[in-house]
View 1 (cartoon, rainbow over the protein chains, first blue to last red):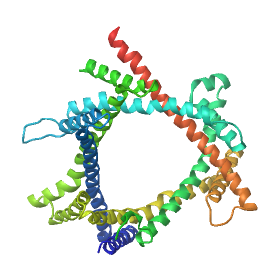
View 2: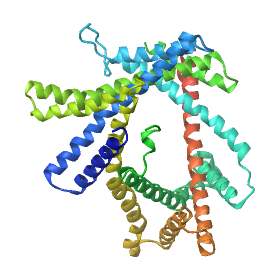
View 3: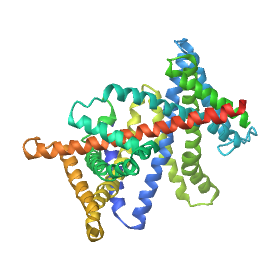
Length: 214
Length: 215
């Protein structure tokens, strides 16, 4: 009951999705679309569970007054602010919603700048990590270093100022040829791996997602 | 409001950059605010672009008669989704296996044909396509097309672990590593430039937009 039924459900849903995908019959296509939509209906519940876990974690921090508990209040403040402004509570006459200017204002003036700054912070750390890690000790390491330098120089005006069009042309050639072939090899490898893993899951060979216990 | 928005954005930007000195309360405040607001934003998006169109609307239309009674079928995935909350009870936590198994089955079933069509067939086709118009290509482009085929084969050989990498296989695999290093190098270069572009954009905002409101 606890192990077998989930495995049977996984097998049935997996097989139905494969068979309906390859069948052009209208009923088959309708079934495929309906079950794919089921996935979209189920996914928000996963998010809800994640949000509940987040709330539990931060609420426990506040209750126990652990170190830096005050920042958990900030998490709640940010979350509640976005949810209240983003939800049009018709019953209490709240005019807000995701299209409301207040929601857009919060998104554009608070969330987007913080997101962009957080990612730009990585420029400093990636540079310092590269300085420490990039040593042209072997042929492969040198190749990685040289390619990265060419791609970076080809991306900025100074590369073309020094070498004319050569820097941007070299960058484009690297991206379109050796880089593309490596990426295709990786994509093919990942796809073959994903297919074999999917077959293992459907057939019940791979069952680690069920967790431990009986 | 625009003035206030610029000042708030500038304050939060400086809060986050203060981390370059060291971890401090200003950075931690901005970090936690970002987490909270991102969660709130995702909740709203999920409600409006997930729950309402795919769960609420079909049932409402079935009730009012706007759509067929098949809309009530949506109650099945809703019940399956509700099983996720059994995780919160120690006694019934095992029931979470049901929705996870269904999601795994559906995802795996969608993955197999999609990966075949969009990744494997499309990538192989893209690799071999230039040879179908080889007469129209310059000698340099033909060299590039051959290089791509060699690169794909060598890279795949590097990831082929069913045989021991000895003799000619080791040689081909070594060439594969060379292509991979070029790929990683260009990925690294592009990532650095992407982050630097964001940095320039933030500094530009601070200098022109924020300081522009002072002077």
